[in-house]
Amino acid sequence: MAADEIRGDEIRGAAQGGAPVPLSVLDLVTVGAGRTASDALRTSVDLARLAEARGFHRYWVAEHHSMPGVASSSPAVILAHLAAHTDRIRLGSGGVMLPNHAPLVIAEQFGTLEAMAPGRVDLGLGRAPGTDGATAAALRRTDRLNEGADDFPEQLAELIRFLDDDFPDGHRYRRIHAVPGPVQATSPGGVQSPHRPPVWLLGSSGFSARLAGVLGLPFAFAHHFSAQNTVPALDLYRESFQPSAVLDRPYALIGVSALAADEEKEARRQVLAAALSMVRLRTGRPGLVPSPEEAAAYEFSPMERDFVDSWNANVIHGTPDEVRSGLDDLAKRTGADELMITANAHGGDVRVRSYELIADAYGLPTPA
Image (cartoon, rainbow, N blue to C red):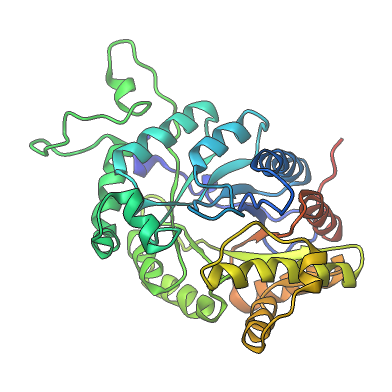
């Protein structure tokens, strides 16, 4: 499906229950100490089913590499698995890191996903590596890492050309086609899906915000780890926005760290464990997500304690009512069109329970 045939209603969601905007899920497929990647992926299936049943709009998986506590190195593979266990919810990448991959490969992967789950696949793209420099070099088989980020607009244009199968005559890729894709409709007897995955740009600074605006694409901002840049980036996106065949007006979602528990004390225990995991990651010691008991016994240095306090100040946590109040306030302050909630915790059951409590707090639909 050509870009001029993508409808805004394949991008825009509708708020459910008492939510101020559509609510969605960002899954990092976290692996806790004493758990396996298989356990984490089973939790992802449970979460996707819950999200679909309770009226969350979309479910995205983020690309990360060389992190023992994050089992989402292959978003397309995970999304195919989730597509087999869901029927309606939109599924997508939040995101695939474009410089790590050849554009044709991404077009083929997401064309395949679209064939598996017609009309409900999103392609969110980032320009960061999703890992450290050494791992990025191994992924890309080059040490010239800045080259990939600097070439992002050109890589993006190439990817969109592959998705739409519309390289101009004389282009070196004119006779190369991403399959599944539009070329099948032009083959003798061919019939092609009327859908093409909408492309989103992801970012944590102003670069992708401006680019998304200029191209008239939807934009997703990583508020969950770059909160100080959220409002400036969204303002830049809206100021830069030019109506396109994809969108007639801006549409921006933000990723939000939020965890609800039946008791406030329990929420604090869980987010402390997740913060300890971040401390280790930021100091070059990535590992599995520690248990709340391990975090409670850990002796934080003054510098680490400052980091934890700063990190958790950006995590909306507490009772369901407290989390709802925090999400409402964030939506109002930022003017975001959608909130995509990520809940990081040691146990999958804790994460599932958090989304249940948030859904209940907003009166989201309940399964028949």
